[in-house]
Image (cartoon, rainbow, N blue to C red; front, side):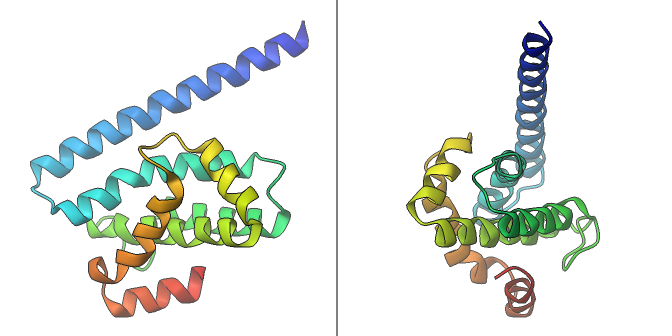
Length: 159
């Protein structure tokens, strides 16, 4: 009976988290529309809630090795912290660096773990499209969205 309660609690928690991220994404989309944010930045920012949910799921996955989990924790702290390379209060750019940082770490998971890493990313991904091309697109276009100085510092921190 206790095992059943634990499973039920985990399902409830997952349901609450899904509702939270769905609401967050909808609020973010509305804010971006209201403030006429460019399509390039809009695309990055709408991925952030989905990417953060993916980070949390990866941290719970026993197939991810300890050193990669430490990097996932580091980037999670970076995203949560309002003080980073571009402070989060400087909306919307303050969240773009967070998105790029997460993409760098997820790219590392795929690179180090190979196909197994890509499969794990896909398994935990609830966002739109395939996560692997999403990560590649963010990494490839980040230089056009952020300044070269910010990109250099992000790469130093997370690549």
